[in-house]
Amino acid sequence: MASRSTLVATKNMAMILNNGELLTLSLDKTSGSGFKSKKQYLFGKIDMKLKLVPGNSAGTVTAYYLSSLGSAHDEVDFEFWFYLWFDPTKDFHTYSILWNPQTIIFSVDGTPIREFKNSESKGIPFPKKQPMSIYSSLWNADDWATRGGLVKTDWSQAPFTASYRNFNAQACVWSTGSSSCSSNKSSAKSWLTESLDATGKEKIKWVQKNYMIYNYCTDIKRFPQGFPPECSLS
Image (cartoon, rainbow, N blue to C red; front, side):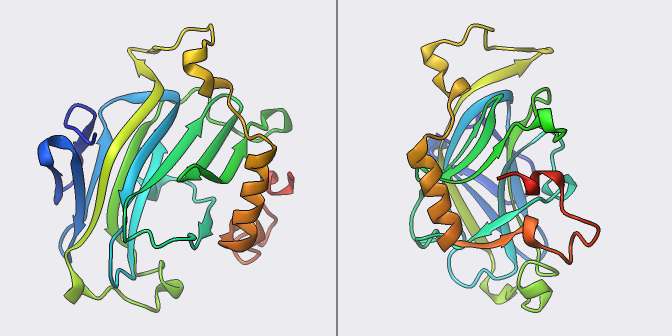
C-alpha cells in the first residue's frame, strides 16, 4: 500500500489515489514531483511495485533510492545502467533493496542485478550508521540522460507519469537515536543476515552480461586519475 501513513509527497504533482492503494508522480515543463517515506530506517528489506513512464519519455528520469541526504542530485553517482529484460512501462514490477550490515542487494522481480558488499576491512566506506529514508522522484534530465543531452524531452508528451503501489518495508525503524531492532537477530528478521547464494550470484552475472549498458568501473573518461577502490574487487 502506498498510503499516507507510510509515504509523504515532497514536491508538486504527486498524488495518492484509490484510498491509498496507488501513488503517482507526474512531470511537466514547469514542475516535477517526488515522495519520501515518513520513517527512517537503519537496515531493511524494501519492496515497491513501479510502473515507469510510458511512451516517448526520453529525457525524463524516475529515481527510486535510499538516502540520508534527500536529493538524488546530492548523491555520489556510482552507477550501473541496465536495459531490463521486459518493458517496465507496461505493467507493475517489484523493485527491491536489501540492506543489512554485510551487503546491499538491488533486485527486480526477485532477480538480483547488483550487489555492494561491506568491504570496510579494505578501506571502502559502507553505510552502517546513517539512518535513511526511501525517496522517489520524477524529473527532467535531458541535459545528460539521453546520449549526453543530445535528445531533448518532448514536452508535447507531457504530463509524464510514473505509478507506484504495494510499498513494503521489513526494516529497522530509526527513531530518537535508536533502532527498533534488537541486537538479537531473530528468524523474523532473517534479512539481517541474508546474502546471495550461488544461484543469486549466477543471476547477477547473467543480468550484468546481457543487460548492463554502463558500469562506472569501466568509465575511463570519468575517472582519468584511476577508478574508485571498490572497482578492483571481484
